[in-house]
Image (spheres, rainbow, N blue to C red):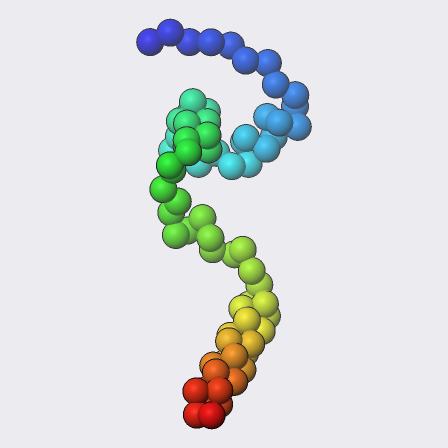
Length: 74
């Protein structure tokens, strides 16, 4: 397999390093990040919102459900 050398800024390298999984090479990581049809692992979404934000979202959904039930009864 042919290899190429890329020069990137240190901050770009740091971003790649932060996203790189333990079991993958930088080439694998770049393929994963740049492929248009990549499948995302459910674990990619863990920690996106705080517990408080999640509770607030659930509360809002319950209010919407109650409002919708009232509209259906009319």
